[in-house]
Image (tube, rainbow, N blue to C red):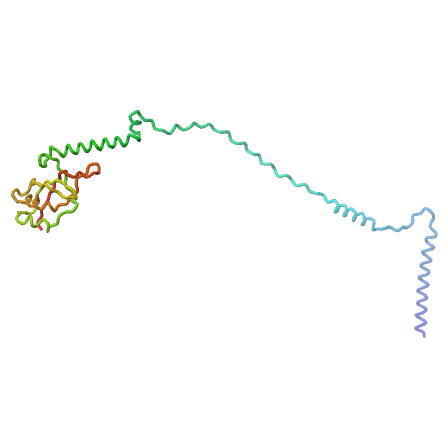
Length: 231
């Protein structure tokens, strides 16, 4: 009971002190004269609202930054054309004779004339004077097929053919590479009978007829020479 009474007493004392404080505040305000400044309430949200309004205005109307234009590169003017000297004409100066020689239509006629002149010279050389029979010209024989020892041996059996001996005959060409009218020309040693043996074996000889301007001259005379060695 005592503790409860003590607690109630303390509570009442605290409440009395609180009421006395309130009354003192009211009496202090009642003693102020008219016209003296009084404490008024201040709203601190106005600055925040203005700051927010300015921020929204800045967001709503953002400033567009102008991009700097790149510097313009000066375009060089085209160079002026340099006058050039035209090259000399590409042709060859010909004399009257050179121009006439370049006539294509006359080439065939000139070739025929040259061939006829060569053939006439060959005929003149073949008819004489030469070392062949009746002074005919003799061409060096070119073998179509050279005779072998078996074909020559029967006709040279009695001949004397020491090492270094030789014999020469002249023959007239006929068709199929054969020869005829063969005649003895010379031999070494003299009197050995080698030229006579060759003349008798000549029916087997096959030679190319001489050619003039690429044409075989059948009927011309050729010289056939044999050199004998010790075998």
